[in-house]
Amino acid sequence: MAFSPISRRTLLRGAGAAIGLPWLEAMAASKSPIRMAAMYIPNGVHEKLWTPEGEKRDFQLSPTLSSLEDLKSELIIPTNLWNANSVGGDGHYVKISGWLTSTTITKTLGVDVSANGISMDQLAVQKAGKVTPIGSLELGVSPVTTGVDRNVGYTRVYGSHIAWSSPTTPLARELSPRAVFERLFRAVNGGEDSTKDAKLLLDRVLEDARDLRGKLGAADKQRLDEYLSVIRSLEDRIARASSPERSKWKALGAIDPAAKPEEEPKTFADHVRMMFDMIALAFQTDTTRVATFLFGNEVTNQNFAFLDGVKGAHHNISHHENKEDNLRQYALINKWQIEQYGYLLRKLRGMQEGDSNVLANSMILFGGGIRDGNKHDPHNLPLVLAGRAGGRLATGQHLVYEKDSALSNLYVAMLKAFGIPVEKFADSTGPLAGVLA
Image (cartoon, rainbow, N blue to C red; front, side, top):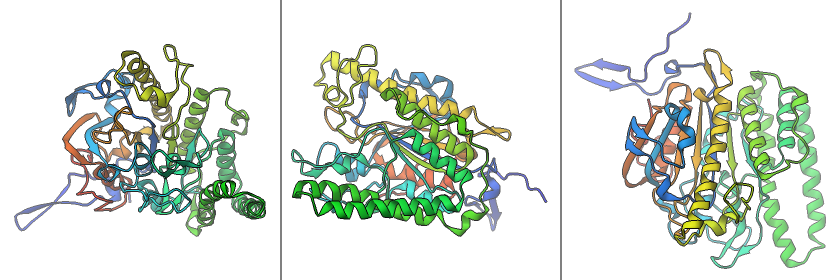
């Protein structure tokens, strides 16, 4: 028997009271899977060009966000959110590693890293990762930074991670678009054998690393240990890949082997777009429902001279000292980042899914842990959320909250829209008002 979707505003009425129903599967506007992704930008933004004018549904996009005009009805732009637990400690590392955990990381120079919580994307994986062949994709364009930043007393490993499967386990990021494609292709076509092959390969890597460690000096041993602390996160990922719940999974589409990316991206800009193509492909085929992406590690000095009007490196420019030329270049970098975000959103919107599309059945978060790179300001974080999560999010709004409202409240709302009945996450006080439909 077929059932019509039920509105989330449906109420139970009795004894003179009206009680809102919790989220039920029958409330879904779509039976398609819900996806979630988080895109992290390092080094902050030109804050004066970020915030839209107006509130709720009567708003105008800011100069930095203007390229998203055709996607305006798909956006939620929250203003005045922050992670209170990222205050103090340093300029960058506490902000990035605590961005999706809403916690304070442990200050350390070595390999005993801890975010003191798991990231919200990995809570989503605990639900969706049981039914898809790949629990989540962690992607980036820059290798993990190792060593110690003695200016602030933190291991640089913190600057390379936003996804934590446990308080002490930052998840390894894939940097090769071709490797991601091959992983997706194997997931769709390879079945159980690909999991066995991956475990054998990982065992060999760890064995070789143990042999190598005995031949290294103290500094190199530390770098190797930092690397291995991330690689070990793959063990849990491989174990989950053989979950019996996944035996019922079927891909929502085929992957054309001829679409394999070239071996190495020619430019940084190509690299970013190719990674977004991989996220879109993964979501379209339902190979995974959760992904994270880093535009760069915190403190990155990626050169943006490929942009007209920019002649310097990112971190240096972000320390603009309120100089007009630096601020101009800073804004151009931010606009380019938003344009790449828009590229992914439009790609997902163009992927039909029944009478809807993949973007409409997704939540794609864009933002960072720093407002202004010159001040390392964690207040009023730059954030955009796109996609309706199958009708569960009230998009088309600029929502302005009280100063220093909890970022974790946004995560509670997103997790609820994802189908996880969470009431509290880190320092949250409840789902962020106005976000859920």
